[in-house]
Length: 92
Image (cartoon, rainbow, N blue to C red; front, side):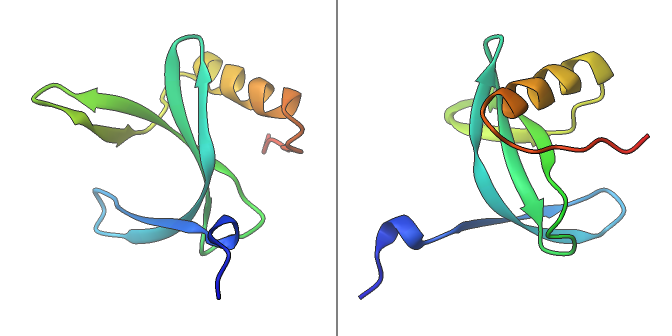
């Protein structure tokens, strides 16, 4: 029998360049009234990737995953994750 707490959630994202990447979902975090999803790509288990979540206008039950283009916003999320105990190293 499988304990549901041990089950991992996976999500596949399709990018504009045609690449599909499967991610393990680590969790969702709220920072300054915005919601973000934290994931590990199947192709690089040592990497953590963070995306924004936004409600879809015509369907309040659905969220869209978006890239974070603003460096300051990204760092706020990274710092919040560090405060939660994640060890995150940044590429220079």
